[in-house]
Length: 329
Image 1 (spheres, rainbow, N blue to C red):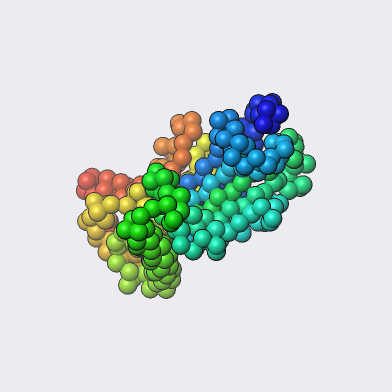
Image 2: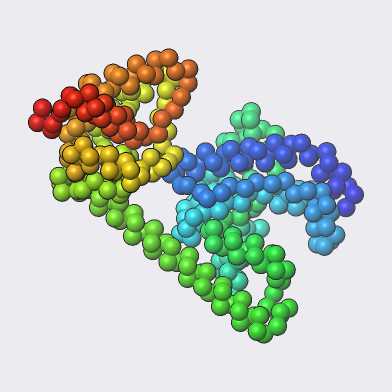
């Protein structure tokens, strides 16, 4: 044990570097695949925990034998996203199949432990790069689970739950009942997410084919602000006019409120076709004004869809200055 702990102390700094590199790498890989995780956690096992593990297992001969000294936990919003993340991990890392385990398959009566565990290492094509070359011999552990699975695992840990044989029958029944409810909730959230995605897809298609039939509301406005080609072109034009200005796509939904809808409708814009027609009719007037505003900016970003607000401000200023406008101007 002493030799392993000495090796740990010697490699502590490089283990922490690996921890930081893995977090950055995983964030980048998931972003490239369009996967939005609820949380990505990384940690280096502390010295006390390592010592307890060595004493408990009584089988390790070197630090390399302990595969979870560095750990990565990826928490997804939905249970079906666990497999999507797993596919990325399998493609981008060398997996130690012998020491990896899918606890969703074997622990069918323990909801909290239904996570997917991989023992992995960096692939050769990555360790030849200078920023990863120090990590060539290291293994680390991935845990992938949904947010509900993670929540229940945390509760289990806090309760000190170890196994069904160690709690009274009444508590055991309660445990299984709550576990079943959470598992069903995970299933229902997947269904709900699928239903919402289908609705959003149908909304985008309707906006393309029958924009005059799509009334302005939060759902249709969000779809317009994130997918409309005219809006995208105009915002790209505004962004490209100044190298210090960039567009982000983090939270367009936060721009949308009941008051924003009311402002749009107060200008006589009732449907998506009205909104796009107004965009195209006045772009040559409000876009240059916006570009001028950005000229003195050192560095800034704006959320995709923000130009809806700029158009509204332009139209409201026209109205306040007694400059009437119409769709047929």
